[in-house]
Image 1 (cartoon, one colour):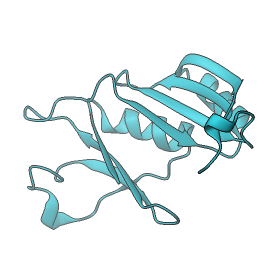
Image 2 (spheres, rainbow, N blue to C red; image 1 turned 180 degrees about the vertical axis):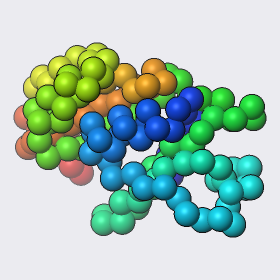
Image 3 (cartoon, rainbow, N blue to C red; image 1 turned 120 degrees about the horizontal axis):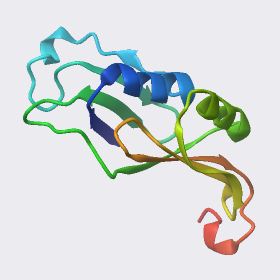
Length: 133
């Protein structure tokens, strides 16, 4: 799976995703891709390779690629309360703080471009509808 967000400010988004949420974003050093209209240009990225493969990247918006808005993403975290404290200390827009849901403790935040980012500390499902199949 691949998720690419076009962002107004790569540094601000990198701070949000890497320093606040803990996504280990790194600068892409692939010089061959810099001029590629789909994957090129200034960006930070990370790939999760254990289990299902997921590649996540934030790209600088351009005239052809406007900032992503109104996107909703969710990430699993090990310690939601710790991430929440970092988010509050960083002045992040908290849409709702940690609360228990049938699938685990969940909170939602607004990223620098207005996207909704949900974080969940997974727990054993309390409702059969959310149990793995």
